[in-house]
Length: 178
Image (cartoon, rainbow, N blue to C red):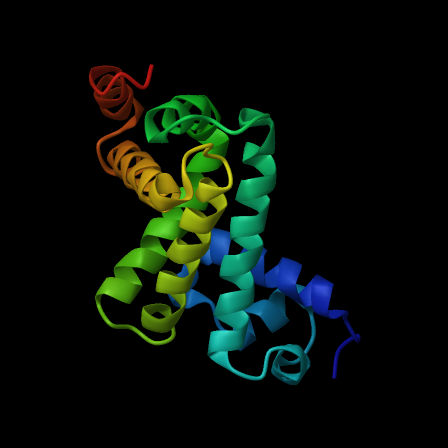
């Protein structure tokens, strides 16, 4: 058996593996090889594939939220203002790999792949909940505004992934985001 690693070290290796190889190729073996340890060490901290994938998705989401924190320093009035505040921080090459993994997870979920079909809706809900904290609107409309913001941002980011930055930037301009 290889060296003993902490849960945080294994999670970091799992995140690195997901970015390097894709979520669809995230396995105990790949994570263990990255660390020079055995599969059993990874299983010790993440007993199921759902545990491993879920932890990776949560970690990626937390990193994204932390990187977006400077974008919104005070609650904004509606989804349009939130998208305008977020877009310059999201439309950067260094963020593209995060959303490549996010859209990969969404595709796996849409195809009914386990554990993504169970985990990704929770991730999307968390993304909407986070956006709702950024909107200063009546309680009755805050979640709808957050959902509209996430739908707009995700649509623009999907365009950026598939059609390229210029197409996404043009669409953002047409939508009044830039």
